[in-house]
Length: 126
Image (spheres, rainbow, N blue to C red):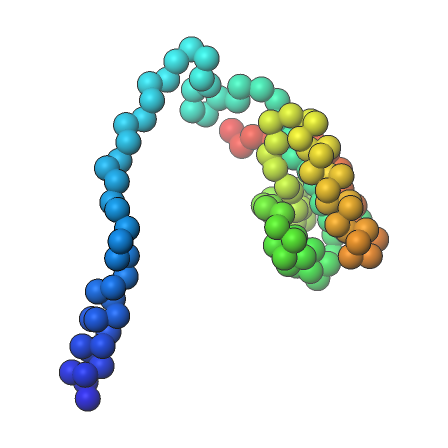
């Protein structure tokens, strides 16, 4: 019985990746004067802070689940010992405003009136 199970597993795995081409790793382009160096910020970036006004833990977990369901990418940071949900970073303030408008529209459709959003400057860890 063990041999049959092992044979089935081997056959199942043998078909994985069939038809896929393996491409050679591409060389990274040379850094030019117009491209920013790694670790340096070329311009000001923006985030969208999202969350309930009272920072309740249960509300944040519900919010992050809702954001995932509706296709919003987010990350969580600690500010003053509290978890804060951020969308971004965005290259321009206009991009952040567009995402905020989309978020507000989807929140209104879902009748989630207990969630606030605010555009803030992106903070970089140094």
